[in-house]
Structure formats: C-alpha cells, structure tokens
Length: 257
Picture 1 (spheres, rainbow, N blue to C red):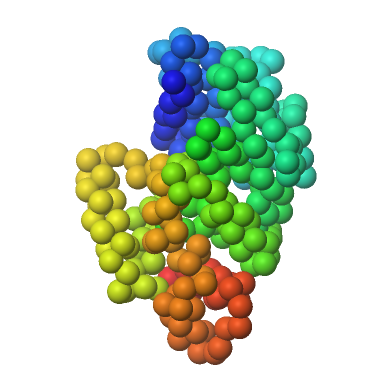
Picture 2: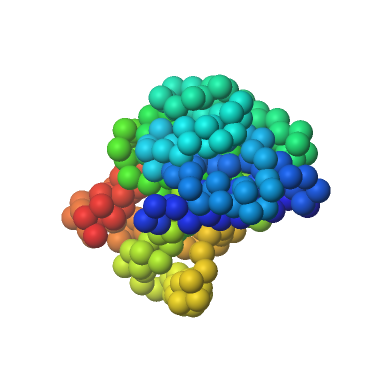
C-alpha cells in the first residue's frame, strides 16, 4: 500500500516521501533541505528510488546535493526547461515517471505560472503540485502570466474529485482567510477554516486536501462563479470580461492582502 509522509522543512515547506509498505524504496518530492529527510531515511532504513522536483526555486531543490552525497546515483527528475541541480531525467508535458520499486507511475503536467517551466506529478489519485496549486490558494506569478497560471490551474482542477492535493507549503489557513474575504457568504470556507484551525492547534498538517474541497473553497479555482467575479470587480473598480481577467484581479488582490 502506498503511503505519503510529510517532512516539515525550512519555515513552512513540506518535503513528501512516497513509500510502498512492502518495499524500503522511497521517492522524495521537492527536498528543500536534506537533514530531516536523511534522518527519516536512516531511522526507517529507507533507500531513495528517485527525487522528483516540481520547479527550480531553492526551497524545493536545496537538499538535492546533500541527498546525493549520501545516496549517490539516485535519479533526479525535474522540468526540462528549468535549471534543476543534478537533474538526470528532464520532463515535459505528457512525460511519465515509472517507479517500479513502488509499483507507481506518475503523469507529468506542465504548469507554467509560478515559474516558467514548472511541472506537477499525478498518479494513483495523488497530485504533487509544488507551488502552482496550494490548498485554498495558488502560487505567485514570479515568471509566468495570469493566462498561463489560469490555464495551469484549470488543468489541475479537471482531475477527479477524490484527487489528494499535496502542495509545497503549509499556507492553508492564511489562504482560507483570504478566501473568506472574497466570498464571505461561502459556508464551505467557514467550515474549512474551523477544521484547519483545529488541525493547526494540534500541530498537524492541513495538507493533503481533496480536490473537491478545493473547488468549493479555493477562489483561484472559482473564477467562473458570480460571487468571485463580482467581488473581484468591486476590488478593481471595473468590469471584468472573462475568467482570466477575474483570476488576474484576485491574484493581485491576494498579493496586496
């Protein structure tokens, strides 16, 4: 049975460890630092089968070199169009990552917006989205355009309701608090805030989240909803004519919030 374990890293990052209970092999997703990951590997006698990288930012790649010092030869998968340290397998839209050690195959989606060449990994009902789609939010537009990010989010949002979203940071509560400003009458947001607060009080992660809940509470996936469009128009003080314009306005609003 496949399990996914979070390793808290840096200030609020997550490194994800994928493991099959029948095997000591483990896949490491976005190691922003290595120390805690190496502790987990040693404590549970795990052997890295692969390192998966979603985008080039240092807080997702900084641990690669040290991991390879301890586990040389581990393949490193990452976006073909970004400078990923020690990458051995460049990936693009439609690529597949085959991991027989875990009986796992992951589909690769190009999701530009946060960075120009970011990718996401999907398979077995699991979505590793890096900093593109967050729980109740999305990444800032550092390199891509609003059009690109909206298209990327729409691609991810089309996955099945039961998909579990694993993103790169613990941002859920802050994102939901902004979502409640955009849609104050959305009872799903209020309920999710209460659930999130309860988890954080216990020191528990709020990630993963089911995609169906994202569609109900994440304003960046709700740009077609009249409540989000009208709120964005009030904020910019002008009419917005399509979903991309609504998305761009909500993203600017969140940046300023």
